[in-house]
Image (cartoon, rainbow, N blue to C red; front, side, top):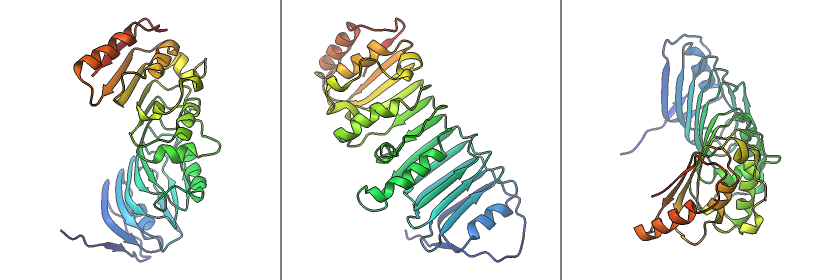
Amino acid sequence: MFRKKLVLCMFRTKFVCQISRLHLDYAGFLNDSVQRLISSCIILEDFFISCSGSNIGQFNICHPFLKRLKIGYAELSNTCIVIDAPSLVYLEYYAKIAAGYSLGNLDSLVKANITLFPATDVIQPPDFPSASEFFRGIANVESLVLGKPTLTLLLYSEPLPLFHKLVELKIDPYFITKKHEKGFLNLLQTVPNLEKLSFPYEVFRKLSATHLPETGPSCLLYHLKMIEISLFYRNDQLEYSKYFLRNASVLKKLTILTVHLDENEKLKIAEELLASPKKSEECSILVV
């Protein structure tokens, strides 16, 4: 099936549209046509757009009542994206990194599902400033999902933003270098109130246990209640899991999601972790 591209080119004539949901798939646009369309939808709450707009300098999404925003498959590498949405509670972004970001009035943001791709085939230094602008703009989020290779772009942000309201963080699996593994430990320092953490085993696979700090980040010491480690396929490298058990004082559940391990190997992992020192007496361990 072939998709036809919708090109928006709105005239200056003012009109009002009484719709709360707007979905634009595979849309192109000229000048400020998207913003004028959004502004005309005076009760708009849910907006999705997959688009290309490499010929314009700025892409604006500004609306006082918008609650859910999805930007997908966007080709905006030469465009600055401006989002001003004081009522926004959910943001989903799946696109190549833009030339720049101005994300304002997002204090109400509750959940964000972010997959940022580099502007070219590989991550390069020109991507880093835009990535920093993006993550500073969503720093008030409470629940965050990072798709590949978004973690890499986040760790290159200088300085790392402080996610002081974040209580849930999920990192989708992908190949992570040793440099980024160390950066992950730094990232945990920026989420002081984190309660739920989900990440792939690859995060720590190449990091020597000697690099783990004696005292864990504050989120681990005082707030983390649930930890899930996915794609676990080695039964001889449990130092990182034991590190969490030793330091997490309020941890209620540690889940290990294995791949390519038989039942005997899973049982061995569970027994070793159950026999390890635990700072939280209420912590249960599940190996599946």
